[in-house]
Image 1 (cartoon, rainbow, N blue to C red):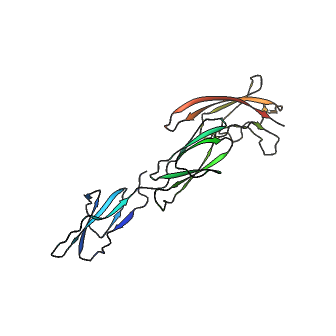
Image 2: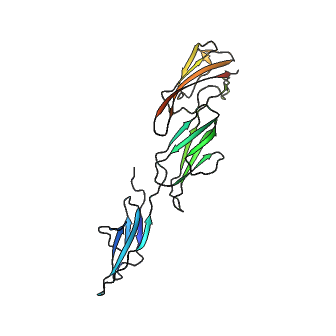
Image 3: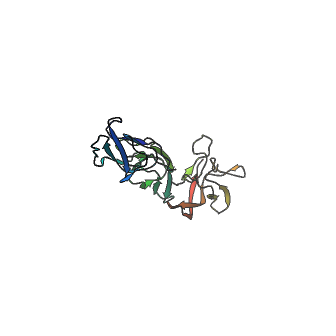
Length: 246
């Protein structure tokens, strides 16, 4: 939102009541009303702050602009979006978009080191990844590190609908955010057996008209969109087959 999360107070180092007057400036321009020994920043206003101190004695000595404070704008990650490209390939690319004001490092878990790039290339399929994001703009990073879960787009090459609670249904993984994606499942002769959605937690249970189908290979097509980091939707279709095992 651009709202200030936390400000800070600049201190001239000369206590109030010591016989001096003060004038604070931002980037060389005097700040109206900023005439105290300290100045509290209460708006989003990074830049170079300085203070001129003037003696109230008859000599009226004036300091040179001093006490220069470099104030930076930083903060926790914000409005995180993740984009996956290379759907259904053995290695895919995950791109993170982060609107925060800080300087960030990213870590793809499990097993990867921290990196300054928000792009992870050659990501193996079949794993749910956790992306850690931290602000490193200052020696004491702002609180609010972000954790994002993301899954590359892939499909199970087999499933076993035997009621044991393990791999009992089949569905595409990683398309949870695409409500319009359509998945069609066919037998080897091209007969449509089932249409499912990637949002359907149940997926396909290996039946047709309530009757269990035999263990063999089945084919599918999936119509989906690949979303680019600038918001462009690219329609795509993928076809392959998988095995039903009993």
